[in-house]
Length: 287
Image 1 (cartoon, helix red, strand yellow):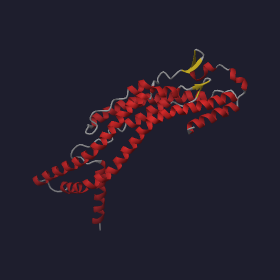
Image 2 (spheres, helix red, strand yellow; image 1 turned 180 degrees about the vertical axis):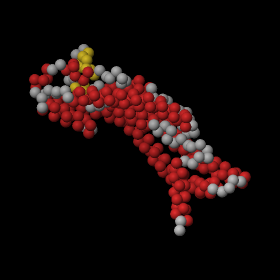
Image 3 (cartoon, helix red, strand yellow; image 1 turned 90 degrees about the vertical axis):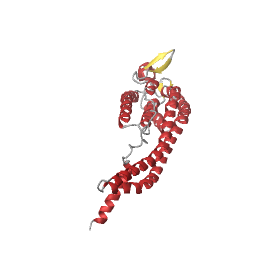
Image 4 (tube, one colour; image 1 turned 90 degrees about the horizontal axis):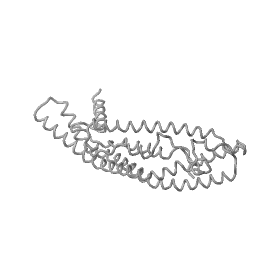
């Protein structure tokens, strides 16, 4: 039993001990915003929350994330901002629903507790299907980030002498020879950066595209997890679907993480490296 579900079960058990058995005949159809269909209690989902609707409103992964312009990146972020607002509203509504659930009395019934415990195990088996899809994607995302961090060190070392020479040339009076050499250095620095960024960016794009596809397959599983009930009581605390969509949103924010800067511009990593070197030289020159 995972930690969240253990906590949920403990809360239910504590509530059971603090309320009388006579409460069990209260109107269950009024709890949790539920309705009854053929004698089965169902949760009425927040009208603002529909897993597939929100998922399909995510922007597709752009064809060019490697050399896209700042304007393109900003437009993409604006589309994601709309998703973020939708998720925030749904999350706040879910918190309120959870608060109402927490304040509802739960009748003490040992048989019911046993049924809840059995249902909890069944819920976790379904949740394992969920993690079987999401975990490999998350692990691949971390592996890409690890590749990036390791590669950045190599890239900085590769470009270090080129950047050093470029800084020196920029501090000298302009001349035809200097301009030509500066252009050569800028092109080589850009080529080195582009080669590295391209490999990581391609992996990232493929993983994000796969995420959108796999999260579509999660719809049925999410529906079961979010609406899994026993005798009118919801097993899950919170919404697995909203959590999945929030995780996807966070991943989509990294769509342009490996975008390469414009030719002739220094990357933030190279810029920091050069600033450190300049400070070191200045310190040595100071009597």
